[in-house]
Image (cartoon, rainbow over all chains, first blue to last red):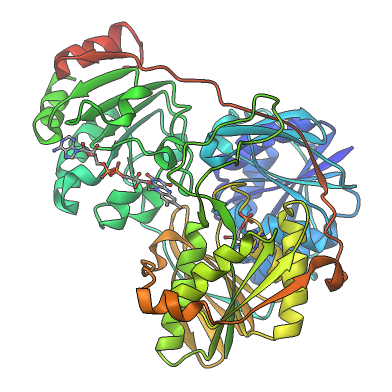
Length: 310
Length: 249
Ligand SMILES: Cc1cc2nc3c(=O)[nH]c(=O)nc-3n(C[C@H](O)[C@H](O)[C@H](O)COP(=O)(O)OP(=O)(O)OC[C@H]3O[C@@H](n4cnc5c(N)ncnc54)[C@H](O)[C@@H]3O)c2cc1C
Ligand SMILES: Nc1ncnc2c1ncn2[C@@H]1O[C@H](COP(=O)(O)O)[C@@H](O)[C@H]1O
């Protein structure tokens, strides 16, 4: 069997989620080809070729693929899908956008957000915000899966796969056009790959206080900053910092939840963290039921003290 | 312009889900059900477009058992004009839903379909993208802003690194993210009025689409339990524990 892994990248670099999805693809088995579709994407293709376990890197370099729009990308993947038994991508907003479109065009089901591979056609995935875990088997001729990156370690470097150009003629999709993107420059580690995350909730009362309390702590810990939906909705934090069922799923070594109550939708995104700390003034807050270490009190007093104690 | 809004009946987001002891699924008996929260956002967006004079009719559609009509009524009470229930036996998978929706789109000819980005029961996040694929329409997923202008939908999307804006020629499919709007509550007069609004019922079999499941659910289990740890009294004690007990600092 052969698997096509769809790389997520920004043309220059490969997203770490790609290396994590590769680990899942290796568990599915067979030879693995990586598709790097983009514009001037030699940097990303080179990085993909270095990943251990990759047999071939296929590069589709075309103006129409400069931005990862679902329409041309899905059309290209479907045109290439013939020889492959499995099509795999990370369950990031990139993979979630394009892969269901691919699956429908191939008339097969998609298995979303897998956390384990049981057999090449059988996968484990969380449902109901992680309150139930289902094992599903695909009965289709091809499997299309998206991979929960936090559930798989990134594949190591050490490979040297050949890089080949493939035609991008199939990548059509005139009905959609890229207009603009606002991608702020990251000042600290990315949420989904950070070893430590400091996360803030509604308790912070303003964007200024959110930053003033959490940034010094995050700086000292070399941590990423996360947020609850309430904090994002209130404008304290950017949307891409939301952790949870409908935001990012993270599993760092250490997750420090500050002024977050612990709604199931939030827990869905962080309860697989190795060590969880909760800081909350309400001793009954549900977050304490899953925290390894709980500290009851006011975040505005405790966080500066914590920063000093580090 | 007509807008079609697919709405799914799901377990209420506040309910604590229990897995059935025989591992066949989750217990839905006597559990509070509601419209999928992302679909409320989709209905709200369609109503706002109508109120702004950008859309004519708002039609809500649900695919499911006879009880899904309650969800359609919720949409009508919010202000949608009419409803369509596509009746099925077993709960359909996203691909089957997308196929049924495609058949409804062919009958209704909407210029815009607004779905939720994700149903909070199956957490699939597939149906809108699949529908767009089957129709050959462009898609704007995870929308936090939607503007209609000159035969196009300009959609701002919540993506992992920030925001992206795309321009889609109509007809198009859009899926909603949480920040798109805050859905209204149905007012009492609207609830009363909604009772008289028409709901068409169609048998899925009559649509001539293949709704057969493609996935076999082998088992459903409760997640591994995570237990409460200990309370610490001070930040200094916390740092000590993280260093010397948990070994994460
Ligand atoms: C469809 C849907 C999807 C959702 N998806 C997500 C998601 O992906 N991620 C997510 O996070 N949520 C999500 N939610 C929202 C979720 O249900 C909760 O509303 C949200 O997580 C609450 O955020 P919070 O804990 O910051 O706020 P609250 O629940 O208001 O909690 C604030 C906490 O701060 C504490 N506090 C207040 N002041 C202080 C202080 N000075 N010092 C210390 N503690 C203080 C309070 O005791 C309280 O426990 C979703 C909801 C729905 C319906
Ligand atoms: N049975 C259904 N009936 C109507 N709409 C549905 C149904 N299932 C899914 N949808 C729509 O598709 C969206 C995404 O669902 P899913 O792909 O299952 O996560 C939902 O928010 C609904 O708008």
